[in-house]
Length: 278
Image (cartoon, rainbow, N blue to C red; front, side, top):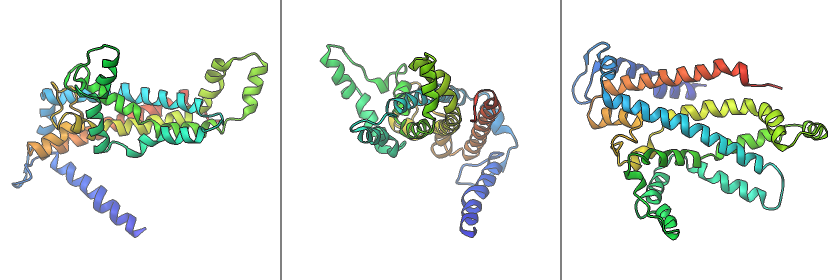
């Protein structure tokens, strides 16, 4: 266990404790830090950009994650049945998740949604005048939500594996009782999938709250236009490495940790009412 313990203490626990200390200091990375107590946390409440980044991140998480999981579950149900070429389709739909939130994917997304991108080229075929989707405050965040939904492959594979574990006897009995496909889905499939829904919600929520690369690349590192893509992690990066307010950035990091812990705890607390274990 020694290699793991060295990595845990050297790259996780000790840096976290150092970050906690810096969150109570005024530290610019270049000069020695000075103790300021809780002033960094108090300053956040009056920081309009901090509050804007919270709003943008909440919208991204609470819209993007449910859409992603709904899309993943829909495709998992469609891909459950064995038919010719189904393995190829499963692999193709899973492929985007292998890239994750990589820089290459973010650059590709920026090219697709810019003024001369693929989306506007398709719209032009139907005589529709497109716009610069990533430069408009009303649509810029939606392009990043679309990217979040597009990377549904990992959740789809988990749902697909769980669907294959549901006994076919349940569906046969339901069919004999006159239940249609929709009734079977809501009365059999969805209740038996709730453990995997619970797992995917927790993992995707934690990941989405920490999303950084897409917003950084698409907005050019500014969070624009008009702070519409100013994710929390991006603003943290700007304060720490752009404005050299590392103490403030460390405080933001701990606030994010508390936000994620609070929502994760809420999901666990409510899971007893909607998660079914066979």
